[in-house]
Length: 158
Image (spheres, rainbow, N blue to C red):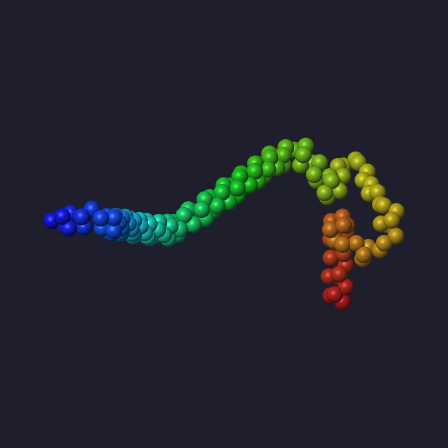
């Protein structure tokens, strides 16, 4: 028994036991770490898969939402422009219902002269040098265009 006890308490035996215990502890901690690491990796992979699925599932509806919001903004802008145009047309209609404005426009646009008045057309000296043919139909008074049309149709009949 003394040999057994001595063997039990010998330095070599103690070092061997200590090494075995240390190796067992290291092995257990490594397996725990690997188990924890593999568990986290599995959880992380599952989380990444769920996030990717959510992103893919929500991408199309989000794109639709953004494009519809842009369309709504465009339509609101068009509505504002249409409202402004309607207001301008209402103002113009109200102006044309005023006899003084209508008379002013008739005098200005058609060169209309009231009975007893003398009408004058002032010709620009530079414009007088150019021939009537050089002037466009929009640049001449309306009655010149009418007479030119009569002359042209009269000449084509002969």
